[in-house]
Length: 287
Image 1: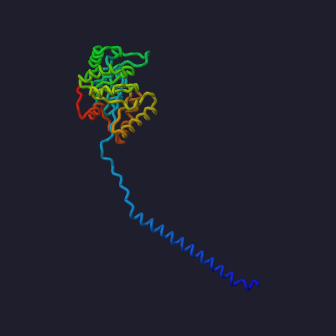
Image 2: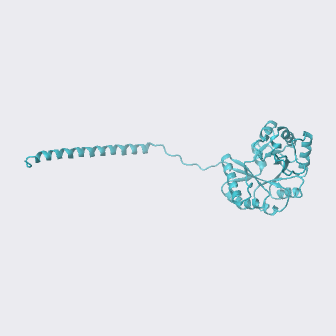
Image 3: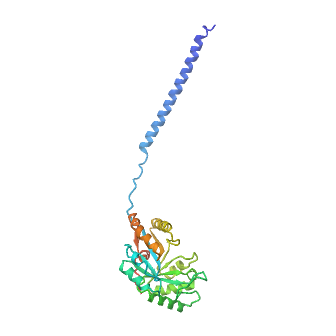
């Protein structure tokens, strides 16, 4: 009985082999079609564009150092920094005029760091601080006296001033004085309620604003990190304004890191250069 079943078993086995062969052949044909289409797509796919090196102007960074005039302790280090800086000099202090002289000798510029009323009631005020209860004549007189002790200033920035820079009447009086002297204003942005940008636009007074404070925390690692943020802003916007202070640690860190920042493609400029670019090359001579 087993012998009689052998031919049928061989026939079934042969049919199975034929199905396997056809399945394998189908898979091979499908694989060939996939490979063929992939090859054709690769040949007709658009070529990826080759990156073109950036040939525009270098990002610009204006470094402003505030609060000069109290002391001469950082002048020696400052004179070793071989890039344009802007010194913000307080009026009527023992070293105000010497700070201006240091800037003049070292291809730097200086602006008046004008004392203005802060929001904090217990904050110590500089002599000749502009207060919000002053009338227009008093504000003009305070500005005139401050400028006389910081001769040659290219512009003005606010020292403190979170209350004054939020008061439109006060800033209109300040900007009227600046406009008559062809001077610009740097808003240190000590308050988010500042009206300076709006008043400057309405009165057509050249204006810049601070992007980054680099040394509100006087720690080396933090200062370096903040300088890095300023560089990022400059790369993103094309230009940035960073504010530091007349602190030994700040100027020592700047002396060390500035060459590396220059090597990375950042151009250091004075604040007035940024202002002049923004206002189509107008010049703002000293009073």
